[in-house]
Image (cartoon, rainbow, N blue to C red; front, side, top):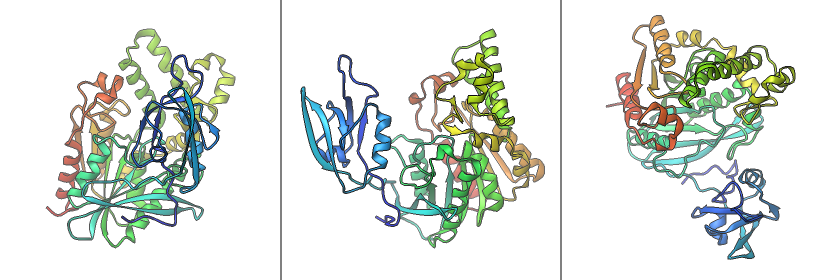
Length: 426
């Protein structure tokens, strides 16, 4: 299996920990699961142990592991201090590299792109194992979350199902790890703006153009990635089509106020409490995104808004991102960009999407069709939420998203559209 020797693979501990010590225990985080092939399993760590320290550094919470792991070098000695059956035990081992993920029907090739001539970001190119190259390729643009784009171990992961379905249809795919995430170098993605992130996708588009096994490209944007998609359609090379899922062309403040109201209603809020809640967040979004004020300064000026401060809004960040990202989005004229696209566009939206309402997706398709009839297609996926899973109800999709199940509608819609536009052979 191909690996990129130029950009090192990150270490793989293979540990799932509880967030806090067990009741009545003063130290050590309980080990819930140990993944096969990880450094922990190879050292002999077992589920049920309590992890005290890693490489001599005390582990007080699971998040502390993230910084520790990023500082490890694969192959270097690494010891685990644990408690097992009431006794302290030190297990010697070494840091092992994360295995390359497996996608049925494809060979995953690790590569990288150099962004702004400064840092390297990991790329994951999945080439179909059957069929004849050059394969049509899809470049994925990720949503707002800051986690790795590498696949989880969940066999029901919607992205895994989508990638495997595309591979079976003879379509190559590429994902790009954000700056500072996973194997990628560079500043943490939480500190970067919209156009900083977009640059990584431009560079990946160019890399795909030079990949001999890949032919025409289609861009697929999810959520935030859907807002970046029209830029790739306009400036990208060899882009023959664009597909988006769960995105909007609204101004960011307007989108967030709508989403906030929808989510609070689903949480059971109503009446004056609801109106007060939405009004406060509306003022916060406006102050930050339109007036350029940091959340910390809003809290200083408006102490009555202190109840809004938390992990989703503090300092210079909102929703885990630097506010410059949202300020740049707010200044975009996405409707105009969509009208100017000159390639076929597929707009997909789940009927249970509570992050961006279905009418926001339909509006994109309508705006494109008004400028160029027949160039857009809108597909509403019944009972599908923003997470690409099918749910029993809109309320369940919000309150218990893990109860969602796989849905073949998205893959089917993409393949039908690609065939209709002549972007894949049938």
